[in-house]
Length: 116
Length: 114
Image 1 (cartoon, one colour):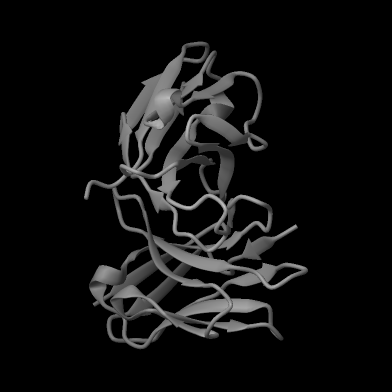
Image 2 (cartoon, rainbow over the protein chains, first blue to last red):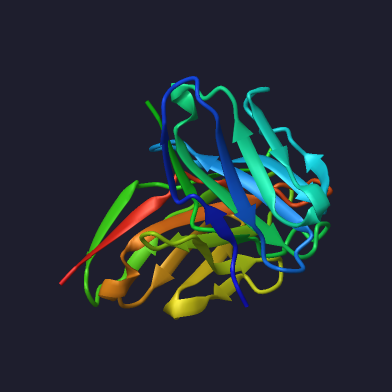
């Protein structure tokens, strides 16, 4: 069974440019999460999809971030325009049971975003 | 609100020595707690989780953690470190809302020397 995959693994962009990150969850997982780790700090929740619906986007930093999950399969996270403080590692995770607080979230390897 | 604190951003041990990584939680109700490990260039992998069953939880690769309510702790241990244990370890708590959301500690990097 394939795990969670993310693309690209690294992205280096200039301030003001646009970047789109992609996440492919484990097949059959209805729940998809985005997290971010800024250097030296904790991994922080960004948002949660159940199928194609945004269940919780309370962690999104501002309206420069837009996440989509069309068709309830893969998800994209777009940052437009990118700012210096957006640099960090963006993790995607997926799980099977949305309402189960003990369920295991399976994480991808992350996308390292550097904004210059 | 639930939170976790990991003491020590770096822990160094010798191969064969005891590994102890500390995690303390804050929660007004019994929490669900997780330990994840991240090896270089890989995603986070679940080591073990506490779900209010047994207080001593055994995980993969010889790791275990004990939930201690009186100390609000969930420390991760392994009797004998191996070189392959060198990685970053994250403690996390599941926020007690309708849907799962993890709150992580700042992580502890384990260094293992020969």
